Length: 332
Ligand SMILES: [Fe+2]
Image 1 (cartoon, rainbow, N blue to C red):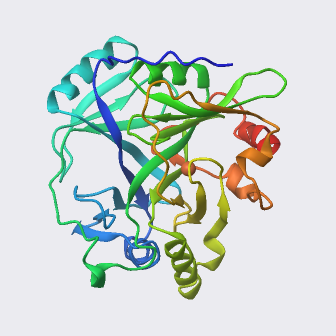
Image 2: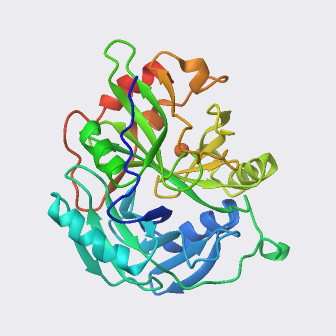
């Protein structure tokens, strides 16, 4: 069994996954999808950039859509929050001293922001300590549309060197809540890592990368999932309801996956279970234990296994792009 060596006093304090920046080909069309189908609320639109949040979110944005000729499954970075501005300075010092990169950048509607790469082959992550606060819209029923999305929950990324990436994130205080292993070698194939008190902020899997498989958001109930899918169909995106509804397993894991107009994959999940006590060890499955991973249904389509979002300016490396395909086929 893989025994995680979690750092209980990390060099800086990441608190949660918080936001993603996508480049999109047609901002107006993307906004229809994100607001009418998924139910995001527009916090601001400035020229070719739109800032969106879920109805439970008080902080300014969890999705940034940037009009760009380079749109089409391209993300600039994923974002995480840190506890204080001091954490950003500690982060820059630690990351640059341990083989990563970190530079302060300007971002509208964010406090001081540090754009980082924790280690070669890992996704670009921008860390910020604050955002402007706007009203939560949980009790504003006329403002709620589509799937009435509540909040961002986690990312799933693939990386070319999973052991190095996992050790890096464990050293930053992330805890594993579950992982899968190859039935023959015992090698860890994917791992769910968390900083907040549920099972996941970022999921990492072994494949040529870094690439972004999906970003997951929490919705309130099954009706929200069905309503989003119905509206997607009404508006011509019925075939972009890619996978599900289905069940992932223990973390209250009802899911559905959509593809946005640029092909980025968005997951909706029900509110996940709590995972916070230090003696609560991660679940593990081997790569043939498909009934535990996905208890019913026929599994994902091939495009779910193969197609992912690239990070702008970063060529995936470290092996054949399809490597995860063969690994996931065992689990799917
Ligand atoms: Fe997910």
